[in-house]
Length: 161
Picture 1 (cartoon, rainbow, N blue to C red):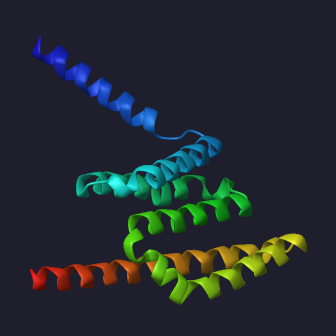
Picture 2: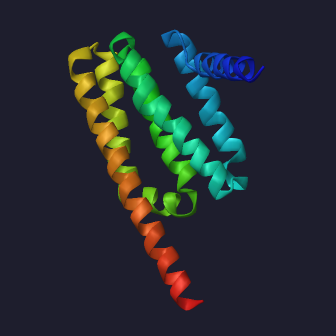
Picture 3: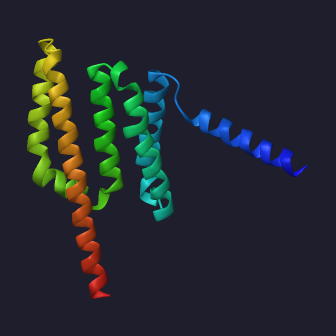
């Protein structure tokens, strides 16, 4: 009886892991969009435990599954995944993100947006990959900086307690 329980638990674990993984590029993008939408709606109420779970899920979308599908993604779809990265970073670090964005990123991102629009209108796909890489670097850098600012603010608040 004990072995049957172990086998059943193992099968359920495998099925649950398989059920969560997207099997096509389309399902990956759809699930990623739903995940970002959920974070945008519920993120304000997340506990540290909720954010930890969201961070794990985000890592699957932005790294594991992205790496699996990246060669099949069009540049527009890659741009969409970059947008999801920026959105998650914003929702994750919302308290200071808007001020940081307005102060440090808004101008650069507006310029990048104009370049992408120009390239799209002139069918310059070869340069799009470079722009996407730059956008990801800007997003990654901004996340690191915002997280550092939040840690500094939290440390300052804890000192004053």
